[in-house]
Image 1 (cartoon, rainbow, N blue to C red):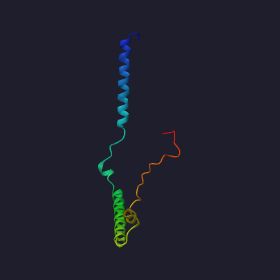
Image 2: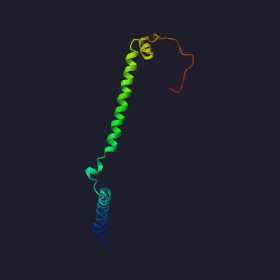
Image 3: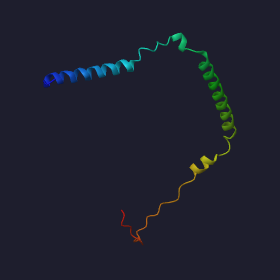
Length: 101
């Protein structure tokens, strides 16, 4: 192959073959299509239902606890109710100066 045009055609053909092979391999045609009936199983559904029931029981228990404590202030409510300390602005000269900033 002494012709540069023939080399370019060979290179273009090689690149096309490479990407075509890549697409065929990525498509995985040798694996069978999973059937819809085989993919639907009752085990995950049952597990999800059991988990949903556990979460609902925990939520009900938590709501009962919170309704029992509704009369007494919670620590979070007490902290939120307290006001923060006042901010003081000082016009004093700094004792030490930093050269890093």
